[in-house]
Image (cartoon, rainbow, N blue to C red; front, top):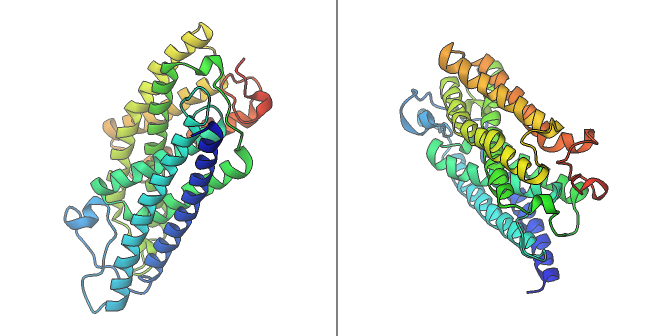
Length: 325
């Protein structure tokens, strides 16, 4: 295949995965709406799917059988469509890298970074869903990915181009893989924290979406476990591979670059989150708020720096600033 054919394949795969993500979102919305009038049975923490974070399914009383079947059907359909969308997403990434001459990793600009970041969010959701039963966050995750894909396609798209000299390094591959993996984990953890706060404030009803999510204790525990997974990966990306790559590219381990500074701020916030939980027993609402603060710094560093800073050596938002200084 020619480079142009690979780029066309990438664009078509991204468009296709956007359509499939949208269909998955519709399926999950139908799933939830079909249960809006069915009371969720109270499941004790530590037993069944709800203790792992799954959707609480009504098991008592006389739930509508058609609603139950419709819920199960659309839940499986939404998960299947999400898996298909993630596969198409991966094809889009591979095609993007193969379209360059020479072939390269798909991290040359903000469009490609956003494609990579949203792919990892979707992939981690599918993987962790099997471990923690995260089906209750499916509409939010799919909606988040779909929104960022639309932003990438409409405002961030750039034609395929070779990597600049500073980006052409295997240390960049290690650095970006670990940073994007941690970003995906922190995003899922932040979504869990946001749902915790919503359930704590409005989750007293026996019907509705918030009645379907796990208990506050389960949400708090799942959020902590996801953040505990993401933090050492982020540490590896920010404090080890990042400085090594910076030294290789710019002959300095630390340049006080805005993106470096905000990456370190993000590290401090998440370090404070984990430290407060482990030493002071800081759980619940305060921990959730601190996790959301970390998520805000994370995504500002990921996207905001490229638009609000004209001095960053990590700016890839537009063609006129895409060349590293």
